[in-house]
Length: 395
Image (cartoon, rainbow, N blue to C red):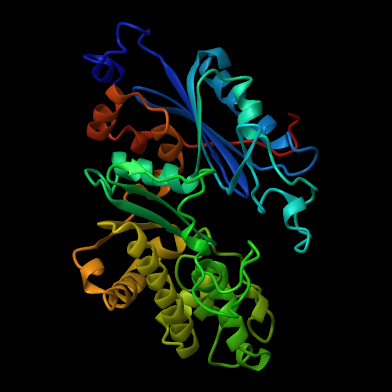
């Protein structure tokens, strides 16, 4: 396969048959994943739960450690990495001309009221630290990198005006307008999840009240169902453990269900549990999900009024696991908006889905003459299973 892909490539004469190598890093709130690829495809993939203790150099240190570990699996050194693409949760700030992470999911100093992150960081100097080690590096927020990958390899191919939205535990997005990504002063645009939709609404983790994420995310769906259900409701015959556990409980948003002798506790409800109750005909679940879809659609109406897009690509576990329920609701509400703007707008499910994390980071640094061959061969579908590293290993 390597020979077939390298043949005819401009890189064939410049590098040996195994190189160059690209490193792709996906930084989330719970884990960091590193993949290494060459023109033939993804060669190795490792991940580890993100460690949030120590000083604010811990995250870039973990990234470097994982890249080194992945390189060892291939018998190469870090110096053999031609370019490093990093797709990361945000938001970003700028310090001395370099990008820093100011992500409440990573920086405990920005989320003290939640007291769930064991550090006092207020920023992470990601670009400064990684650029000291790797000669070519490109960092983007995960919304921009996701829309770049979908436009290159997925549901957005050939589209110059496209918005990607992830509908999951939170809500994030990235967009291209007239063939160019929009980024903003710090690389955070368009943060669609934090568009205000209602006055005096529920709180969001960012500190806003009544924004799209606070009204539509997986966290919001679970929260809103809990507020509609009393302890008596949860232990009645109408809601059973089998009702909640029906369906795919392995989805990303789903936590183990807490089953007591009397039934389910309110605290055990997750977003996916609410969808399972919806499928059972539960009227409270129907109300919660309908409201979430309506607010989600109204957020899309708002961003479309600004960007005048042609295609919305929707991904994330909340949507992908329940798209046959949600997509008709979203489209119906969206199409009630100003026809001059909403007419001819298409909605497409994310095509890359479980491969998006790897391809999002790789798409940031992939050489042009690889792209066509990857489009034809789809080598990401043959990537090896990830190596999961023990958190007790010393960096």
